[in-house]
Length: 155
Image: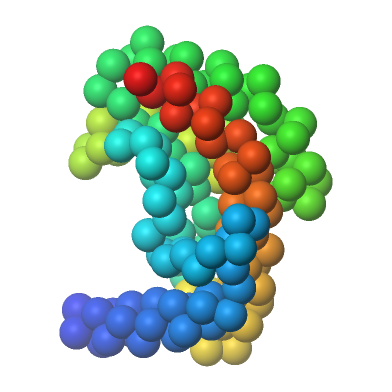
C-alpha cells in the first residue's frame, strides 16, 4: 500500500508524463488540445480519465441537474451509437443510463475500459498511454463531427 503522499506523487508523475506524451497528438480539427481537460463546450458533459490498480477507463459523463435533459442527451447518444462505436475502433463501450455517485448524484455514463492493467505498475504505463491515445483520438473524431448536435440540445 502506498501512503497518501506516495499516491499524490505517483498521480503527479503519471499524469504529467501522460500530458507530455499527449502533446504529440492533435485533435481531429488539427488543433492542440489539453487531453486531460477535454473541452466539450457543454457545462454538464465531461470526458474523464480514470485509473485504478485493476483497470483504466475513458468516461463520457452526462450530468445535468435536470433528469429530462439527461434523458434527452442519452437518447441522442443512442441515436449516434453506431457512429461513436465506429470512431472508437468498434468498441461500443459500457452504456449505463443511471449511474450514481455520492459526489455527483445521478448521471449517465458511457465508458471504455482496459482491464488487467495497474495504474501503479510502471510496466503497464505504455499500454495505458496507448489505450488512452486510441480512445481519446477516436472520441475526438466523433465529437468534432457531432458536437454541434449536442451543443444545440443543451440550449
